[in-house]
Length: 486
Ligand code: TXE
Image (tube, rainbow, N blue to C red):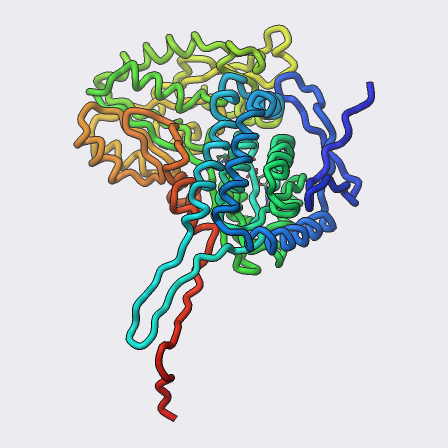
């Protein structure tokens, strides 16, 4: 069988071979099968991408917001029409269940493109009436923006970065995570088919080295990263060389607080959503589950019973609820946390790799729950990015707020109670960029998404993101004579 042609970078409206000749494999984590080879982009391709993006920017920024909006709306429709095709690409690249990819990944990307398409024509400056003069501001695009994606939501992250960038008149070079290279290339085709000029959206394939070349390139005005905290710090240091605009969506270790009066079944469902969705590979996951001591045992009993009923299996099977972790290396990392966790807390559910039948070829780990966890153990302090929940008891409101905030992370938080006055009082004190009351991990595009403390800089989604992809120019217009003392 002739091997699939290697996946190349997409620059200036066409696939471009890599001069380095270096390639890497795109592997299906559920089966271990090689899906295709990918050509690693080097300095030559990064230079070409920046040149193409600069040319694309000149064309695209000259279009009106309304024209850009029309084209982006077309792209959103084309994306929706290819939901199943792209969802299956995501499933084979990430290992996540098809039921999730069909319901969320592609469609939330299309929602995002439509949202910013609708805003494109509304971008405007302000006017200031002054004595003998007037001034106004122009909200202008930044130029060439780089988007760097993580592997857990490949196409959604590509849309969350490219949609506001393009709506504002910027050009983008997007580097998907090397473990999930394919869907961004399809998005590039879709933008081209919708009428986005060549060079406005480019996809450069490669690992951290390619990412670093992009971040350090003097022709790049802005970098938007989704990744882990350590990468964020390296990217910020590299971007400092040319003082680039930087926004970052980084890791988390978010608290989920369940008060005694909470709807128990609702809290159990949200805790499962907040820990086992996408095999736990979700940055906002509420992996520190604080339960009021008076309902702890009842909560745990219901949680364990429901979690044991989850279906682990072939991600392409529509019944599957828990798919495969992203790679053998990541699976071993998660299993390492579980093994060490068994010596520090009480394992009440899961805790092993699943190797039944064909699953032995993949990276499947049971949804895992530890009880009697204390604040100082590794399970509670570190981001595991897998299906591992730590359950902790608390007794008082101030106590749980203090413990919930005792982390360098600040991405998200959840509060479960029927007492809404308490809910609002508590979220006001929680150090997190996103808080949910009586639900979890719901991220409509209208709501700004992002972290506090070391979980990120800036926001994605919502109106505020326009400010991350534009800059203001102030213009003073003299209406009278120049008052000059000389
Ligand atoms: O991240 P990595 P991963 C976080 C999540 C977890 C991590 C998992 O919490 O910690 O991301 O994703 C590129 N210069 N979020 O493992 O390793 C790399 O090639 C430039 C948070 O992918 O940080 C990849 O494309 N680029 C999030 C990307 O950075 C570099 C949602 C991320 O890689 C680089 C999803 C460098 N020095 C995951 N080093 C949220 N908050 O929204 C790596 N890369």
